[in-house]
Length: 158
Image 1 (cartoon, rainbow, N blue to C red):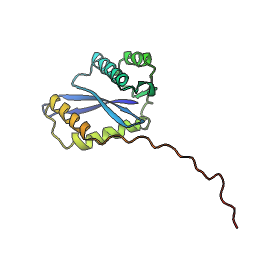
Image 2: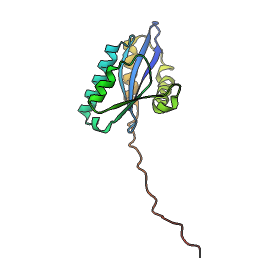
Image 3: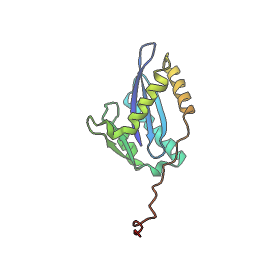
Image 4: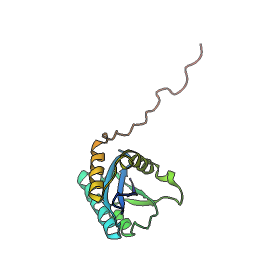
């Protein structure tokens, strides 16, 4: 699973921060929240809500790692919260966007599709646009299992 902040500006002026998490195996995106002021208390509560949602869905046991960047918006407490349920936090390297490529690609798609094509008025309008975007996304495809080749050696030449 990977987590990242996406920053956008509304027409009324204030910057809005979107906290999103992506489950890598199923490519399922969870928008954890939108705020103009991502305080440590807000981020901690969003991570607690994510853990409760994962427990309710029964998918908490399948998640072992959370990949995130070294942003100062993440309090140290979230590593403890995730550690209590068995999720290890992995920090991306400095200036290594490919380490979190799935999230970076989704952020690019989010910007290109709804955020760059719709004039977002304020925070409630942004929340509505994100809910609509999430609703219209196709269901995530299950990961393709690797198939072993049935041929062990090439056929002998005649």
